[in-house]
Amino acid sequence: PSKDAGFEPIDPKRIVIMGESAESNYGSISQRGGLAIAMTLFLRDAGLPLPCGIVGWSPWVDLTHSMPSSLDPNLIDLDLLCPMAMYRPKPRISSPAWEQYQEDSQKLADEIKEKKPSIVGDESFQRDEQIQMYCNNEALAIPYVSPLLAESLGNIPPMLLQVGEVERMHDEVVLFGHKATQPHKFRVPQYSTSNFDESPFQKPTSIILEVYDDMPHGWQWNNVRDNIQVGLRFPSAEQAQISFHRTCNFIKYVSLVENDQTTEKSLFKGVRINSKGEERPLEQYDLDVLKWDKVGIVPDITDYTNVKFVI
Image 1: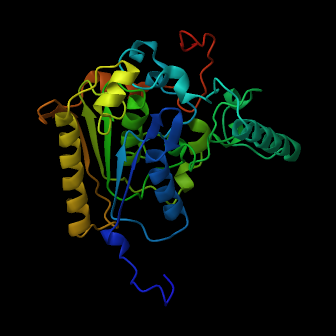
Image 2: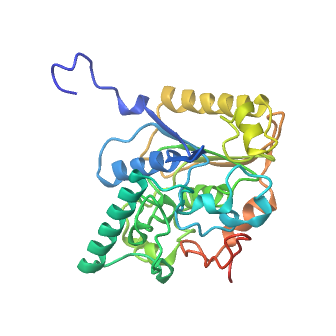
Image 3: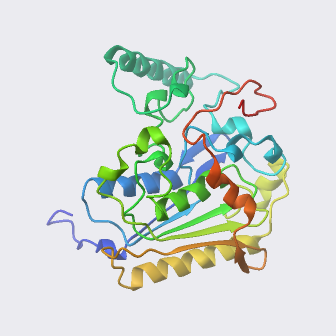
């Protein structure tokens, strides 16, 4: 802060960055959880002081929608997010703001094509329709857009990741946690990790990964009114209280103890959390995603009504 700000700077070792993922509420979408992680990656890459910890509630870390749960038709009746909510939304009624967005977006796309920059990514990015409202297709693999696709997720402060069992973010969050704590093992996707051996960020990141039984996207903040309007049966407040309690404990721990970021050791704790707050090991359903070989590849959607992967 400036000299006349009237307050002293806060020690980064007392700061925790927290975000909850893509919030969809009455057509309003914001990427907070993914943004919190993206900001931390930027601070790391720029050599700036890092916070003492990060909390991600279902962080949206893969804007290519490449993971199976992202478009799984079996989750239509279970999760708050419908499959196409993950893609660039198309409003039912046009507006001056939407038309201006369309115009600006197309102008940027034309400028990118004219400059012909060297793009890190997959050939699946090359399509006429813009995939995301957040960025042009050429930017999908930028780590500050899709953190899961970063060359390395090492050298990041301790992180708490929470995700629901039946939400579309499940697969990318589970893989993100494993890639961060085992950067040498999970070098995916190949197009962005081919130079990993030269990366200065190879130290494992300490991760606590919590998968909550039967929970949909945003179970921590949905209220009764929202539940009735979307026609889904959401959990009671007890599950949200469990999430808040465990989050507060993590924040207290990382902000009150000395975290030695220079150590080569890391912690990985992956657990399932039931409705009573009891822990048990991750299930095979959670671990199967670690074998997925199409990370960072935009799926070919042939039917917008019954979304499916074309293998």
